[in-house]
Length: 435
Image 1: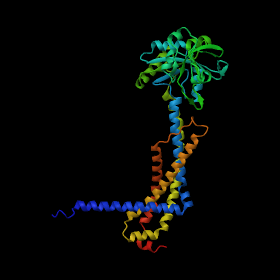
Image 2: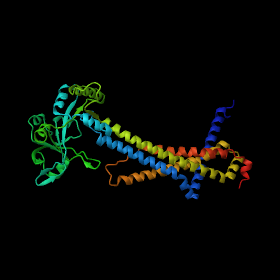
Image 3: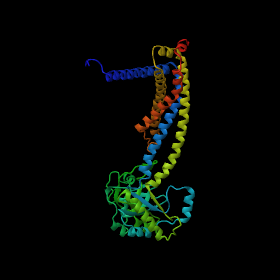
Image 4: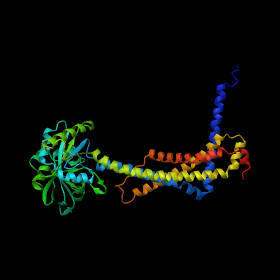
């Protein structure tokens, strides 16, 4: 065989290449046809894409806000510390009826129970206790006063468990705790108010009229829902008990070595507490064991409802937008019947006609999706600059943007199926005689 003659494989490859080239030309022509149609009928194009634009904007906005709030809640609200759970009088984030039952049944956590868990709970990395004095507390220094300061009585191990970290000085020690020392550890709000240009270590401030020596300052934490988390004073729990509250109600924090060990420690803590409180086997716990996932699961239940409503709204607008696109494509096919007849007469395959119409409807969906994404992003940028800045941090991921546009394109393709099928059934002779 002559090597210069094309083989069967070469001829098949050339045919495939020709087919691909023809479909590329068809797609390119469909793009310019769709663009010309949008330019020629601006009002009709706007009404055509309105449903898709609203649906895409809604999807982008709500999902970005929910994603941002998920991050915010996990970092600011549900962040109890690394591998930490808290034993408290109540189970957090429960329903109102369950809380009323727990209020009648559950007893506060006391210092004796903290000592009991500290002695009997094995395998914990750290265990600490904290009590908060509710009501307005004021702090004073050098003629200045800071109102609404959060006052906590903590055990020395609390600094290794919670969010607070030492920036200056030190936290109180076991010795401070044992001798009920009149020392305090303060947040950065007090540092900024009282000691802007002064070393605070060793200075004496008064909290509720009681003097305390400052031994340390915490790292800045920031705000949660607009409320500063740095306006606090920590004192030893024994000092808190001696000066402010003889029998404080505690939150007992238990830290595991890793996430896998947390469940074991939770079960062990539950068994110890039920045994100490002589809770019968068939009765519910008279305390709550709370971890970060307790709060996150409650939050996800709420956002699950929001997500379901959002999907419903998006689906309605997408269906409306799809119906409008289908009607417009039917009108477009009717207007171009003569043109389609010419294409069929010069040898275009019916599948290629279908492809052309589907490309046009897909491009309509694409334009609507892109417009919705742009409007959604601009709206979120405006929202970030309003008074809720810091409390609301939308998180718009590239995957969410691509998914939104992909859904819009899919709606366009599905909406173009019927017009494409009708156009492919046209008879070239009849189509050529159409006006």
